[in-house]
Amino acid sequence: MNEARSIKQKSLPDALPNFRNLGVTLRILVLANVMALIDAVLQARGWLDLPLKLMQITTLITPILLSAMVLLWVWQPSFSRLTYWRGVSAVNITVGILTLFIYYFGGEFYRPSVNGDPFFDILRGEFISVAMCSLLLMYFRLRARVLSYALEDARLQVLRARIRPHFLYNTLNAVLGILRTQPKRAETALEDMADLFRMAMADERDLVPLHSEINLCKQYLALEKLRMGDRLAVNWQFQDMPEDAKIPALLLQPLLENAVYHGIEPLVEGGRIDVLLRRERGILIIKVENPCPKPGDTQPHIGNKIALQNIRERLALLFDAEASYQVTAGRDYYRVEISLPYMKEKK
Image 1 (spheres, rainbow, N blue to C red):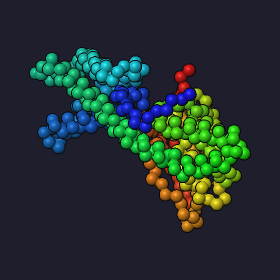
Image 2: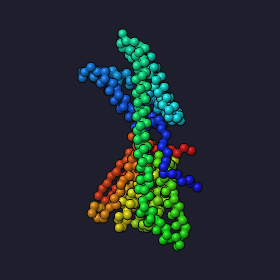
Image 3: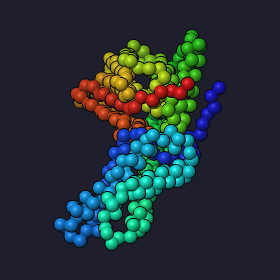
Image 4: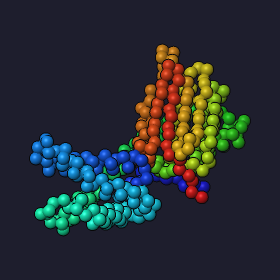
């Protein structure tokens, strides 16, 4: 039996950024060059001197920056197993040793001044490298905390939006209507409801097997079909979608609930929801499309879009720039398309 979990989750522990993530790599490159520009502005004596200073600084830090990113990419699995502060120390030590190595073999390229103190140049380079590394790690930590706090603050509101009162009341009434004539079906419906509430209170940063999310969605749709009957139809399409794929928990179910609530339910004749799941090389694509009332036909349901905003925040927190969320709305249809990296379920 699955144990219920409290809505008041503990704060997520700090973790190093994923150095193999494309978004993390791009942010490191951009932020490092911004810090180099700030340093050039502080050292420059005027506008004409600024480009020269910037070129000198970027020429010196680029070999260190690129070499460090390659090493961090290679050692990412080892760093991910460390506690946060040990990981921070390991990353800073790696960058520090790499800086000494490059300064030593760089020779006069890193010590162009004849009258300069070589020992001071090395210490200055070491300090700048470790300081930049620490600032970047601090940025990623603050960014993760901001997104995590946003998820925690929205958790109860998302639960209310995801399992709406109208859905709960209508489903209970539908169960009561078949309780005597179809007791087995009523029991199955109540079990499906329990699973939905249990998953709604789970940690929203957990990755779950794709087949588990699909089973949950089918349970939800079975409950909706219990009260809507033939007005609700669902077309599932799978294209090279491996069963060992993992996705964020409750990623697909809120999309289907919005499709039912805002698209199918206001239509007198009902409609069909098309769900497409496919893999293109290392990318998983999830697409949900549903019909919706034309402007002026019926009074549409007004939602607060909290659940969809929560999905965007979770994708940004888990996958950064490697995930995307796109919405296309036409006169009589609504489509949501999500792409995210293909991650396998560990055996």
